[in-house]
Amino acid sequence: MKSRGFGIAASVVLLSVASAFAQQDKSAQSTIHIRDYCDPASFNAVIGPGTCVRDTSDGAITFSGFVTELGADKSVGAWRYAPGQIHVSQGTTLQLQSLGGETHTFTEVKRFGGGFVDFLNAASGNPVPAPECAQVVNGNLVPQPPSDKNIFIPAGGQATFSLEPQVVTRFQCCIHPWMRITITPKDQHHEQVH
Ligand SMILES: [Cu+2]
Image (tube, rainbow, N blue to C red; front, side, top):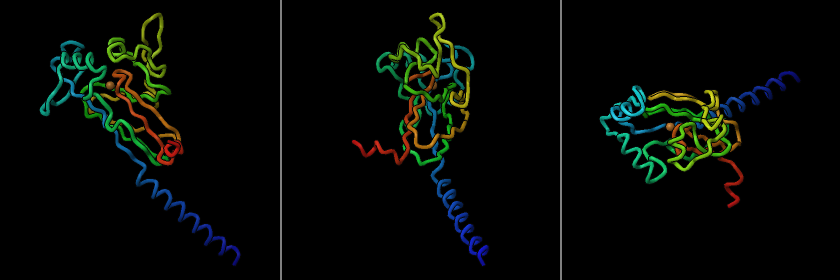
C-alpha cells in the first residue's frame, strides 16, 4: 500500500512537471528578424562582390543612400533587429532569422558600443568598440572570433540562441552598431519599480 501511494504521488509530480514543460514550450520561442535593405549593385561595387545578396523586388537602398542616412541620423532605420525590444518568459529560445542581404552579427554585449568597422563606428557615433565585438590592437580594430555568443549570420541565414533565465540581455550587430535589442525577462521586478 505504501509503495502504491508513493507511486501515485510520483505520477502526480511527473504529470505536473510534464505540464510545466508543455506550458513553457508554448511561450519558449521568440522570433527575431534581422533586416537590411541593401542594394546589391551599389554595395558590391563599393565594398566588394558578395557583400549584398538579396532580392530587390520590394525595393532597396543604394550605398550612397545608406551613407547619407547614416550621416544624418547616425543610424539607418532599415538595418535593424525587429523587434528591438522584447519581454520573454523563462527558458526562451530566440529564433534568429535574417531577411537581409548582408552578413550581420548577433552578439551579446554587457554594454552597447561600436563594432569592428571603423567607418561605421565613427559615422554612428560609437567610437569605442564593445569588447565583445572587437579588440583594439595597435590602433586597429580586430574582430572577435565567432562563438555561441557572437553569432555571424549570413544573408538569409538562421540561428538559435538560448537565453539565460532572469537576466536582462543586450545584443548588437558588430558591423552595424545601431542594430540593437534588449531582452528583458517577463517577471523582472524592476518593471514594477518605476
Ligand atoms: Cu549588421
